[in-house]
Image (cartoon, rainbow, N blue to C red; front, side, top):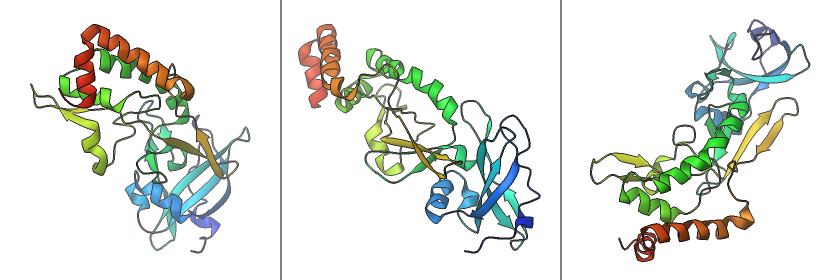
Length: 243
C-alpha cells in the first residue's frame, strides 16, 4: 500500500493533551496487524486506507495519530476516541491494548489512557475482595470462589469479555434474574510508544494484590477465613460445585 503525499495530511490539526500544536514528522500506511486491533474499537479503521501520523510537540514529545483517507485518497480525517475514565481525547495509538489468557495474541483496544489506568488499578483488588465478602447472591459467591484469586486488572466495561467466553464470567441472580458480571482478569497489556515506534508492556498487577509466588498461600489464608465464618463444609461445597 503506497504512502499518500504529504499534502493529504498537512492540513490536519495535530495537538497534544494541552492543546498545543504539534509538528508533522512523518506519515505512513498503518501496519495491517495494528489496523485490525484498532478496528476492534474504532470501526472506521476496519476498511479503506488507514494512516499512522507521527508528530512532535514543543517539548520534543512524540504522539502517533491515526487518520483514514477520504474522497478518493485526496483528504484525510483523524480518528479519535476518549478515555472512559477521564474523558480526555485519545488517538487509537494512545489507547491501552489487552488480551486474555484464553486468547493470547488476540489484542483488543480499551479506550483508556495509561495515566488513568495507573489510578484505576489502585481500587480494583479491594473491589474484588468486597465482591467475595459481600456477594450479591450465592451463585456469584460460588463462581468467584471457583475462579479463585484475581491479581490482575479487570473491568467489564474497560476490558469486556469476548462473547464466546461470557458464560464463564457471568451468573444469574436466582432472586432477581439479574445478570451479574464476574471479574475476568486480563493476561497482558501494552501501549504503543510513538517515539520508539514499538510497544511498551504494561504491568497488569493490581495494587495491593500478592506477588505471584505468594498467591497460593494468600488464597488459602483468605478461604480459611471464609470457612471459619461460613463453615468449612459450606465453602468447600461451593468450591466443588456441590452447593
